[in-house]
Length: 161
Image (cartoon, rainbow, N blue to C red; front, side, top):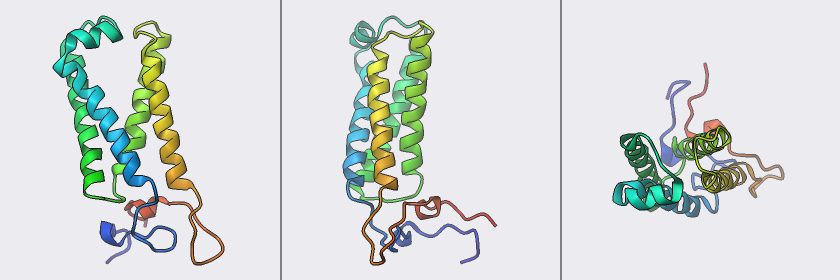
């Protein structure tokens, strides 16, 4: 393997060289996957109840498009949990998508464009981010005395040359 190549997922090291995910990883994927899948599919199956809770929207096609994307992201997390996948881009997608949704919620509630009910979603997204950060950066027991956090190289990010 040349320098800069990504290691196969099965051999990704985690601190002590253990390719297994940290405790709680699969549970977090199930939780975030279910939350995203359910909230994403909601406007697709009942636009009427979605609008009753979240307030009127101008472009319903855009609501449906975002719903489809959030559903697909949620299903990706559920497949990852089911297959017990570890590493790769899933943690980045999980934190990034939760961060993006929380930011949209907060900014557009502040501007008066979205209903304040979206702050509940922003809170859930912030809790998911916090859970991911604790999970990925907490100290893990190792054979040696000094544990280390999960580093980008541990998640399959290629090393810079």
